[in-house]
Amino acid sequence: MVRNYKEALHHKIFETVAQASEALDVESYVIGGFVRDLILGRDHKKDIDFVAVGSGIELALKTSALLPKRPKVQVFKNYGTAMLRFQDIDIEFVGARKESYQRDSRKPLVENGTLQDDQNRRDFTINALALSLNQRNFGELLDPFGGLDDLENKIIRTPLDPDITYSDDPLRMMRAIRFATQLGFDIEKASLEAISRNKERIGIISGERIVEELNKILATPKPSTGFLLLYQTGLLDLIMPELTALNNVEEIEGQTHKNNFYHTLEVVDNICRNTEDLWLRWAALLHDIGKAPTKRYDKKVGWTFHGHEFLGGKMVKKLFERLHMPLNQKMKFVQKMVMMSSRPIVLSQDEVTDSAVRRLVFDAGEDVESLMTLCEADITTKNPNRYKRYHQNFQLVRRKIVEVEERDHVRNFQPPITGEEIMEMFNLQPSREIGILKDAVKEAILEGDIPNDYDAAKRFVIQKASTLGLKPQKNVE
Image (cartoon, rainbow, N blue to C red; front, top):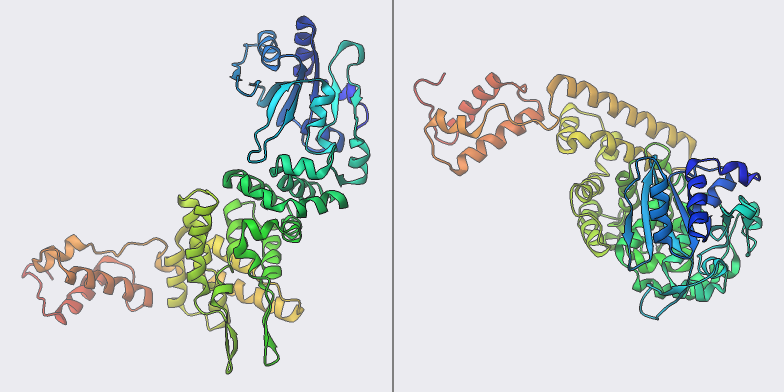
């Protein structure tokens, strides 16, 4: 952990803010995440927060005037804050303030305050740490709540009564769990219990803000830590009941099924070792959500989840809508991964035929590699022999994909003969026969009955058309 704070404040921005503060005769401090990450030795120069005991907006404007090229200052008068960008660092200025809250909103009523007031309003002790930029004590650490000890002991703790902290701004419950996941810290027992007591308050938080925290949890190396905390505190059941429904293991006639909730968390952790793609991580989180509503017991075969991929894909869209997540290609990608999540698994258990691989590559298109990554992450067996065999089978599927793709070029392919050409060949107007012939060409190529080239497709169309009573024009060979 870093101890020489004065030496750490060598960047030009700190010197400039100190000069601006002196010129305005106000006290200023760097506070929050920058200080926390600086002490921990983490990357700490993505954004920096400054607090002025006075006007944060005036301090921002003065700082800009002293900086090279006078960077543009964005002013948010309603919040009493201002921002500027300097050397690829986002810098925010705020006046020291104290806050009070109304029951139905996380937006506080704000009034000017002291540095201590400002530290009191911070969410956690480790985020209330401040470093002075004032001439008399430049670089001195101000730590009224023992945040430094909490950093050393890896504890997430609120500065004030956790029930008040979480009730005032329920998003802090999500942030506590997110920081615990990111930093590998424990949430203090009293604070964790307060989250459970105040979980219903999450209802006043927008889906966008909740998803922002979920995304940050999913971006960590081990998201299961955060999702287990969300589950244990009761927050997950309020946010994503589709997931908690998977933690319901039933037994009939001595037969049980896998716990699909804990399996899902394993899959998410697995995939995080192989990709940083946020939306593929979402697909891993949601890949089995269709299993709870499709679960059935059959006396002959035991527990089944028929059609869970298809239903899961439909549930993805509803979940994205409810949480105000993007309904664009990102949602469609997650849907596609969920709906296709069993295809390579089934393929790896049977004889790997060319036609089955062609269909997989055709349906997955450019996302076939992502699909294979998801399916390999789905291997959570603890039996070492099965684990080895399953992975070997997937390697066989991967090699077959490369072979088929190099030979048949079916990824995102269009039939080599167009509908317009078919109409011209048979002197047809737009009709259902055109669609029948185009689909027949596609199926013939995917099945390997004909190669993926124009001449073969043309001969096939003429032959197929004859079964429909169609004859080509005389000039068509």
